[in-house]
Amino acid sequence: MAPRASWKGYLKLSLVSCPVRLYPATSTSERISFNQLHKDTHNRINMKPVDPERGLVERSDLVKGYEYEDKKYIIIDEADIDSVKIESNHTMNIEAFVDEDSVDVIYQDAPYYLAPDGAMAEETFAVLREALRKSGKLAIARLVLSSRERVVTIGARENGMFVCTLRNPSEVRGTSEYFGNIPAGNPDPEMLELAEALIKQKLTTFDPKNYEDRYEIALMKMIKEKLKGHKPIIAAAPERGNVINLMDALKASLGQAKPPAKSKTKAEPAEKPAAKLAAAGSGKAAKGKK
Image (cartoon, rainbow, N blue to C red):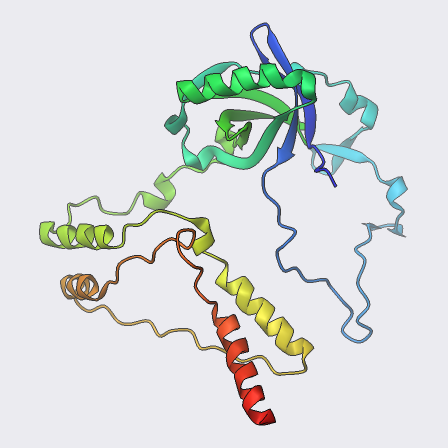
């Protein structure tokens, strides 16, 4: 089944335009999620809209309202929303170009993939993509998503383009409230040198495959045990040691630190603990049958 586009329109640079489709680059469908059930019947609970005066109401009776004063609303219908027409409803007009590393990560929000909409658009799309790639720049544009205009960055990625929506500056909190009382004094040079050596000792190439969600894995293991009728095994969290002397702790850490594990993409994947347990279990079962 082909993925569903979140947005369809035109990517425009000056007088050049290209029909494109925008797709979400991430998905949370594989995450473990829970439903709300009644504790006795185990029936799934439906969240229904309630009017404080009339009780339960049908969804067909719901309308949108904007609160312009306390408990005073103006009703907004679909025709009102459709009447708000701006260029970015259907066009991503490239307004500027910036260096790839100039966009602060704190402003980066949701990632999307951008692809040409039809074979006729592929040549124009490829020209714009390669121009971005060779220049090492990101394009800045705007588009309307979920009834609001978003500023986005556009960059080349493989055979397509990568779009990232940016947070509005009003959504980003200032740092003074959190960092204002932290002293800016210079640390001890020897301790700083030890810390830098520890960083070098653990230096590696980032591969997201090496950082699977251990909590999610443990959660699924617990669920499978409950399905079998077993009580979940409670694993104790490691005890936190008391650091008495920072210098001693840095020296001990530097001496005990192991080199970073090799990337799993270049070597055989390490056997997961769950697989080892399963293999050990089957081995015991086989011995029992003899």
